[in-house]
Length: 434
Image 1 (cartoon, rainbow, N blue to C red):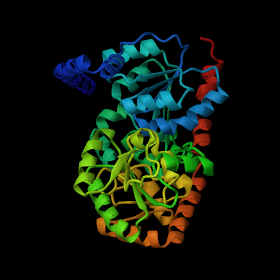
Image 2 (image 1 turned 45 degrees about the vertical axis):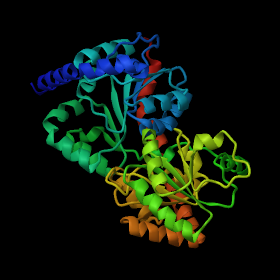
Image 3 (image 1 turned 30 degrees about the vertical axis):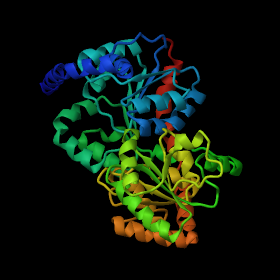
C-alpha cells in the first residue's frame, strides 16, 4: 500500500513539473538530452548483460575510479554502464573513466520509467555508490533477480534520522540488497537499524582514501605556477570548494594576512562555477586585484605583477592546484554545508584547515584531528589566528601536512577489500553464458 502511495505522489509531482521540464528542454539542449535519458528514452544498449554502476555526483564518480579500474583489469570482458544524477558527474565519468562502456543519467524513480530502463540496460549486477536508495529501482531489480551491492556506504546523522522516520517504507527496499559494504562501524550499525540484514553487512573502509591523485615533477609544478601568473616566491593560501558566506570571510582575512606577508596569494575556488560573478563582486568591493585562471592561462602576463587573488574558473583542476599550496582551507565548513573532502590536499602533504561544520566527513575529519593531520577552527577569529601562526612558522605547517599524509597512507586499501566482496558476483557473471 505504501508503495502505491509513493508512486501516486511521484506521478502527480511529475505532472506538476511538466511545464518546467518542457520550458527547459526548449531552451537547453543539454537538459533535453539528460531528461530524455532520465525518462528512459534512449536506444537499447548493444552491451551483453553489463554491470550497472550508479554514482550520483562528482564525488561518488571519483570514488568509483580505483574500484572500476580494478574490476575492468580483472574482468576485461565485462561491460560497465555508469549512471549519474548530475551533469558534472556525467562529464566527470566520461572524462576520467574510459573503463565505462556507456555513461547515462539515472532514470527517474517512477515504475514505468524504471521498468523501461531495466529492459534496455539488461543489467547482470547493480552497484550503488554510497547510499542512493531509490525504492522502485531496488524493488524492480529485486523482482528481476538482479543482485544489488551497496558499496562505500555512508549514512550521515541527518540522513539517518530521516531514514528512521520512514523505516517502515525503506525496510522492504533494503531486503532486496544482496550486500552492504559500509565505510565504518557506525555506518554498519545505522544500516542495520534501518532494516538491513546483519549477515549481509560488512565494514570495508572508505574509497576516498584510495582516490587516484596526479603526480607532478618539479618542472611540471613550475609550469603550473607560471600558468597562474606566479613567480615561485609566493606563499599560497588555497580555499577550495567555498560556499556563500565563506568567500567574504576568507577575503577579509586575506587582506589582513597580506599586510603581514606581502607575497601571499589567495587561490579561491568556489564550489559552484555559476557563482563566479558573485564572488568577483565581493573582490571588487574589497579593492583586491584578481584574475580568472583561464585568463591567466591564455598568457599576456609577462613582466606584470601576479594578481592578489586567482579565481579558479575550471572544473577538475583543484586537486592538481592543491600541489602548489602553502596552506589549504577546505570550504563548506565555515557555513553549515557539511564540508568537502579534506583528503585531496593531504596527498601532497599540505597543511589542511577547516571550520566547525564537517558533518559530511565527520569520522574522517575527527580522526584526522586526533592524528594531528589537520586543524579545525571554530570560526573566523580562530581561522585568522591559525593562518597567521602557520605563515610565520612554516615548520609547524609542514609537520601537520606530513601527519596528514601518513594518515592518508595508513587508511588506504578499501578498494581491495570491496573487490574481494564483489568478486564472487563478478565471477558468476563472467562464467555465465547469456
